[in-house]
Image (tube, rainbow, N blue to C red):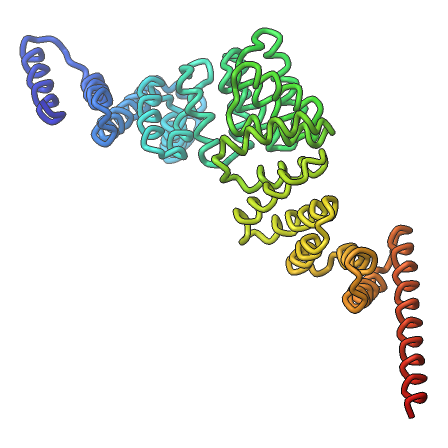
Length: 419
């Protein structure tokens, strides 16, 4: 039997009951019809019934508010009749506007809007209900409506109110911790999470939020401890492994970083460019050069359109090839880096030195020393390291000029002797 048939039967039964003399409340009928539709997940029809129930409940509450309006009769008697009418109408209007609709009806309408992703309307209805009258589910829908709308301030406010009433709602506690972090108030979230953990240390959602908050606060040592705890609890998801790897890398725990990042890359099915890049860097730093270069090659393949990532990857790739004494490959990687980052002064210097001392190509060395000097001399406030690099480059250019002069003199003498 479909919803329409059920509704017809339902209305027929109600009419029979009414005929027997039992008073049937039309508001109750509308609510029950809405509930029947919701049981069938028919929010479209349910919304119509709940809206009618809400309008009826609002009308009744306004009528009751006017009926119970306490008019200041003694003061009104002293005023002209027209003025009395004006004041009475204003008082009636104010009473109607302040009339409170039945909370259960309002929550049912809001719930229907929420399930239909009309989060603005759901929030507008729920925020008018006193907190003590909100059900737990309605409270969550109010907070999460603002989250879905991207209103972090309102989400944090209403979630904090909810947590006051339901302090062990781990899902909302975790959301509030991250909400504070988004508002650049990670300390508030951490205080909340640490207090929660005094009662429950096993809630993965809360522990994950605390770890993320420490990470966003750049306390990588603490973040690594919490991520390790999550891994021990069985939360070996990609995000946890990846975040743990980055935390350990930043904290200098390179072996832990390697273990986490290598597992994370496998879980991503070798498809996460950032993970491949960071694993490559850690491998190079831990002298796993061949593995690191493979990871960096993979990162390049995955992120070629991303200029920012390519800058970092090609620079690390050049360093990896250089440290493994693959100097031609290092030069190619550094040159690719310059195609993404032509203002990288140190890269020109590294290329020039490699051509001078290792590859023995004087013409290329002179070319890159000159490009380095052209850029370095434009720096308004060069640091001591750059000044030293400029001094050495100028010495090398001077040496190359002397060599060139000697070659020219030798060539001239040979030419003169032949004559």
